[in-house]
Amino acid sequence: MRETPANKRHLEQNLQPIRELLGRRELLEKLSVTPDSSRKELVSDLIARQTLADLANKLDKLHNADIARLLETLPLDDRHFVWRQLADERAGDVLWQVADGVAETLISETSHERLKAICLPLEVGDLLQLAHLLPGDVLDAVLGTRDPGERSWLRASITYPEDTVGSLMSPDVLVAPATATFKTILKMLRKAGDFPDQTDKLFIVDERHRLLGELLLTRLLLHRPRNPISEAVSTDAIAFEPGDSIASAAQAFERYDLVSAPVVDERGRLIGRLTVDDVMDYVREEAEEDAFLREGLHADEDLFGPVWTSARRRWLWLGLNLATALVASRVIGLFEGSIEKLVALATLMPIVASIGGNTGNQTVALIVRGLATGMFGAGNVRYLALKEIGIAAINGTMWGSVMGLITFLLYRDTGLAAVMGVATLLNLVVAAMVGTGVPLLLNRLGRDPAYGSSVLLTFTTDSMGFLIFLGLATVFLLV
Image (tube, rainbow, N blue to C red; front, side, top):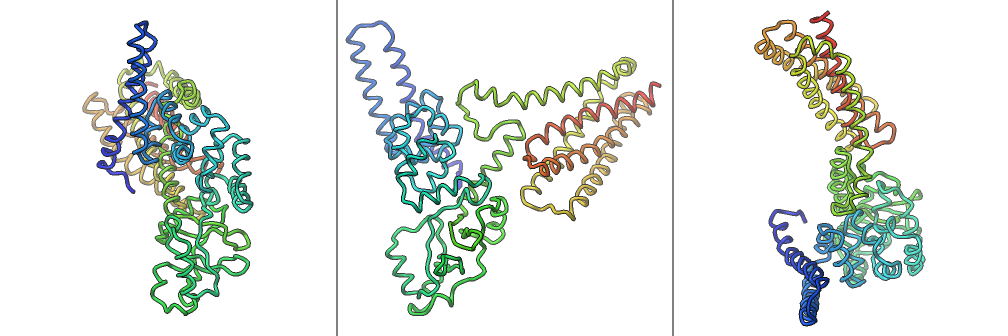
C-alpha cells in the first residue's frame, strides 16, 4: 500500500507514545544513579516496572512493520532496548523488514543463540533476505533445520548476485500438471487453503517439472469442471531465469502488466516465482540508492548508527571532492595576473562554471535514466550524444548572448562581453559531452553510473569553465 500523508500521521500517532515511554525510562535511569533515600529508590523502581509494562503493552498492539519503522527511527540505546523486549518469534519477522544498516546493528548486539531462535520460524523468502547479514554459524544452524528441498533452494539462492532475479524469487508457487481438469484444480486449491501473496495464476508443468504455460485464476470459473485445463492454458508465459537482471525484469513487469512471473532454470524447469511486490521494492530501493550515491552516501546507512562508522563511509567522497576543488583552484591560480589586471573576471567566472554544471547535471540525469531502463543500444548512443551536444550548442548560443549583453551593460566592455558569451557556449558544450560520456563509460566499466558522475562532472565543468573563460580573456583582452 502506498504511504500517504494520512498513513504517515497515523503511524506517527502510534509511535509517539512509545518514544515518550522511552524518554521516561532514560529519566528514571538518571534518577537511579542519584544519591537518595531508599524510599525514593523503591518508588523509582516501581515506576520503571510500570513503564516497562506499558511499553510491552503498546508494542503488542503494533504491526511488525510499524515496529521495524520504530527501530529505524530510534537512537542506538533505545533501539537495542526495544529490540530486547521483543519475543523471539516476533523479532524475526521484524528483523527482515528493517533496513540493512539497522539490521546489522541489531544482529551485532544479539547473541548467536538468540539469533538462531529468532531465525528458525522464518519463512524461506524472509530468511533469504537476512542470509547475507547473518553470521556463518547461525546461518548454517538454521539451514540445518530445514528440509532438504528448502535447504538446497536457499543455498542456491544465496549464491545469486543481489541485482539478479534469483536473489528475489520465491519458492512459493502454485503448480498443476498439464493433464489436470478444472475440477481437480479447484479441489487442489480448496485443499491448499491460503495462497501465496500476489497469486494470480497457476503454473502448468510436465512430469519433469518443466514449465509448459500458465493458467489465470480468473479463468477457472469460466470452463466446465470436467474439461481439460489445456483449453485455457497460455503457452506464451513471460518467464525469467535466475541470472536475469532485476532491472530488465522490472521493465517486463511494467510493459506487460504482470502480477507474478515464473522463474526457470537452464533446462526450463520451474524453480520459483517473481512478484510485482518484490520488483517494486527493488525499484524503490534502487531509486533511493541512486539518490544517495549522487551525494556520496550509502543507501543502507543507519541514520542513528555509530558516528565513527558514518564518518569513515564519507571519507572517499569528501577526498574526491577536495582533490577536484584543488585542481580547479590551481586552474584559477594560473591566471592570477589576469584577474589582478581585470577584476571583473573574478565576478564573472563562477557564472560560467555554474551554468555548465547545471547543463551537465541535466544530461547525466537523462543518461542514467536511459541506462536504468535499458534504452541504449549500439545504434543509438551516437545519435543521443550528438543530440545532447546540439541542445547544448543552441542553449549556449542563446544564453551566452544573454550573458554577453548583461556583461556589456554592467562593464561597458565589448571584448569582455564577447568572451563571456563564447565561454558560456563552449562550457555548455563541454558539459554536455562529459554528461553523456562519463555515465556511459562508468557503465561500460561495470560501475554504477550514478556514483561518481556528479564528481567528475563538477570537476570538468568547474576546471574547464575557468580555463576557457580566463584563457580567452587573457588571450584576447590582456595580451
